[in-house]
Each structure stands twice: as C-alpha cells, then as structure tokens.
Length: 152
Image (cartoon, helix red, strand yellow):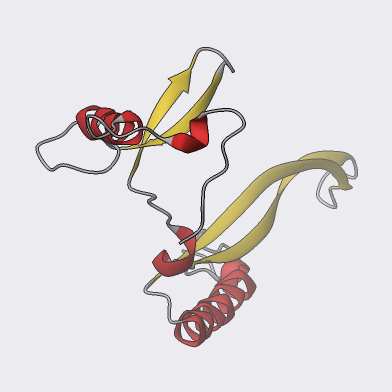
C-alpha cells in the first residue's frame, strides 16, 4: 500500500484524538465511580460521519475535479449509576387500591390475611362492639339529660 494511502480504522491516526479523549473520559468515570461508591457506570462514544463534497483544481488536467472528504465528529460521555436504596426506595407495607369515589389511587393497610392485624374487618367489628357494649343492669348516667356524674 502506498505511503500516501492510509487505512481507515478506529486505530488509525485520524481517530487518535477521539481515542485520547475516550481514555480521559474513562479515567474520570472510574474516579467518579470510586468517589460515589457506585458499582455501575457506562461510557458512550458516538461518532458522527458526514461527507463533504468539494471541487479542487486538478494539476494533471488543468480542470477541477470533485472529491469527497469525510468529516468525523466524536462525542464521548459517561454516566455513573448512583443507587441509594435507603433513600430512594420506600415500601409502606400497604396495599395500593383505586378509590372510585375520588377516582384516584390510595394506600390502605393490608388486612384480612392469615396474620391478624388491627385493620382486619373482624377485629374492627369487635372494636365497635366493645364501644357500644354495656354490662347488663348498668345504666350509663352520663347519657341521661339533667344528671351529672358524681365525682368520688
């Protein structure tokens, strides 16, 4: 191959600046990952290629000739995945439901499962019964108008 003709590969001299910049971004990526204690990152290299058509004088013929000149644009970027599960994830241990009345999603306590909770329907019913239950033969005098409860 003639010394005047160059191979066009990523390892070619034409891409030397892009490779050097890639190496620099890669080093910064590692530094950022270590500083932020991230175990994931990525680096992206995008090469835009266009062809510029131009006319130049041809010394052999004295006329002009059309040539195609490639133009390479390179963009290199990195991204560090920062994950902090303590701050970014919230699990309220509640059930997501759709409320027809408000036409919106709401959270409700998980109830009516094998493990009893204070939110289960049967326990709620028992609590209501306790509130209204009175011992037989005992009159709640506070419910009778005009009678005040005597302090002991």
